[in-house]
Length: 482
Image (cartoon, rainbow, N blue to C red; front, side):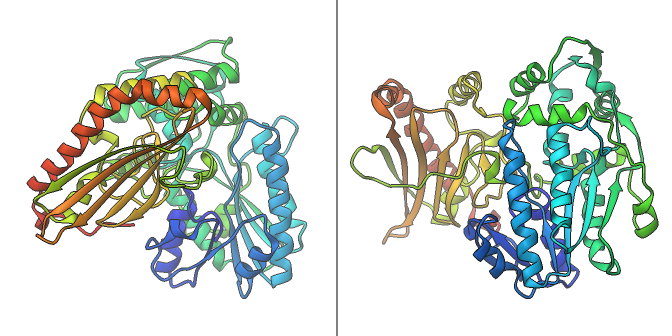
């Protein structure tokens, strides 16, 4: 399994394990999968390293290829092509019998957007390796945490009147993530033969405008959509960035893809997977909304580090590192204290000065950053690599330690760290530390400019973590998932 830390892969692995399959995952950072998939073998390695690929593919019967780039740069297609070629070559050398690949729906012609064309090209490259390839081509995936669904959801939730470009009237055949996963699991049971391409879609053919209005109706919202011819994909991507947590860099390729009509024209999936009857749009949306109400998505579009950059190495306290450390003593256990700082961010906020945090998020958005709008995958659970507003979980030890790395626009690198340590008298010491590694003179000026705000916010946040921990009965806490 490649892409096990991503949106689809993270949901597929548990289903394969439940079906009795032996699963091996290749991940660039094996720590990110610790404790997530009980029974799966985890191998650390890079998709661009042939040695790692050979090791991961040794003795494997079927390999899932679920990695791809999302960027507005033309370099992404070259990288995807190189990765697919190396993967196919390594799979053939290891004796892999089948590669299962999830690509994008759309007619093979010159009108495809660069990203959809690249998805098709990856399938071609994999097939050229000589290994049998089962390629699924899907349009928008409807599910909690899907980037395409999130873009539509945020636009509809936040804008009573939507001024939209002409691409909103292009026909599409969205599919529930649950149905995509059923196809991917069932592909293992197909008889071996030639490589095949399956176009998969839900029961309804709709336009993007239809989807927004039907979503609004399901949510009890009154919405209007007005189409205009003037909004280019670039301008649309800036608007999406302003209204949603999705950056313009990621929104632009999504929008370009929406200009293509993506509907199922081949009945091969219905013929070869008769046990799968894809649900309609309304049912898929209702299922996604139920998942949000049940505590958050299993995976989200921002799970993968590819969305942003890999975390910089944490250098700790050293020369040139600016540090703001707060300590508090709590009449509580480390588990009670950790349960509070593990739930910071998202809808709960940061316990003090949420208006200032929101202002910092708005400033981040203004400079092209992610802002606070991304929230967090789950209100209660954290995993290594999870996004928390404009932070990323960089280190995690359940009931003891949390380190967040800043992903907002900064003149340097920043971390926010929490530790809960038991004292000899049974109480707990909370240590809350802000680290900042400035870049140049402006980095130092930034630190001292915001220091008065940090002093106020971080002091109060530490005090309130302790207060809430002391008010939280340990009997109400459930085991932390990491």
